[in-house]
Image (cartoon, rainbow, N blue to C red):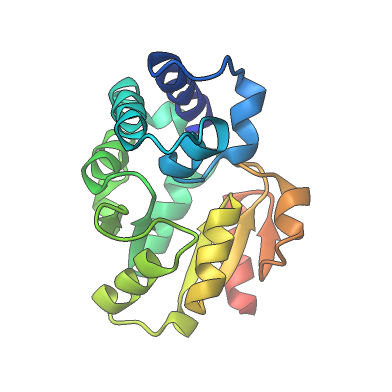
Length: 200
């Protein structure tokens, strides 16, 4: 789903709430996908743990919304529904698990995912911990798994876990930045994914 506008809006609200620097949309956009703690350190980085926690709480409060299916990217609903008939699907995200489950449900995709897992008690991507957890939970060797993502944290986590990495060019980072990370493949639309997997 196209969560970029809501993520950036919530980050700007949180920086304002903790008296951070005056930032704009374009300041946050290059950092899509990074954990909130890293976002705080990048723009404030004062070592104040209490202030950093207030930033995270403010962000999460601002992000409390229930997106609808209209925020899904083209082909997403159909591709997920089709793939769920053939493969066990999972979501790996830096969001808290409860929030991620709520969002997946609100866009109508909850029936298709076996597991939705956030970074609650695991290090966030690009650390591979969440992906390794999902592989073990679903009973797959990492070499059998494909990660589809739109940021460097997704590609980095997949590579660190020994999982094939597919970058989606229209999401957070775009083709040029993702190419530099040398994923196993890049796609411009989810409708390209079925044919791609046949080639792996």
